[in-house]
Image (tube, rainbow, N blue to C red; front, side):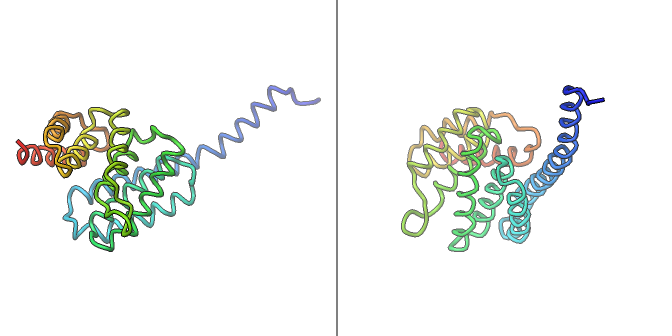
Length: 213
């Protein structure tokens, strides 16, 4: 007796789910681990003590991005980790990870412009704001501004969005705007799973606000 089409379709779908679900769960578990370890090292260690751990995390993130090359969240976190490594290393040693971070974040935005709740745009804005300009690197204040504005469209009350934008505005001499966004950062709500880093940025925003007022 031939198998009914609906039963055959259900069987094929069930088999597909059995193959896909373990991969999805594995990817989520690995990414969760990366996020947690990044959160810990960047909020509990000094920049000098962050470098070795961030290098190891960057290696893991690279392996994960090769395994899931079209996953925007994976690419965003690869970019975040590399950007943190660039910040911790400083100087000319920061240029390599900063450029790698930019590439990963731009790819993440291509896949999902609103992915990771605007984290890719925030990190790109900070990279463009801090990196040296041409011919040494890719720093550009107009591009930084555009990235921060994109992030604000998605998450206008975000602590990190407003803190990094306020810091950029202060560097640009736009004090009144910097004060406005620093205040927003101080009043912002922390994100689930990002409590430590958001509270750290809130404290940074308070310090920035005190220096500006």
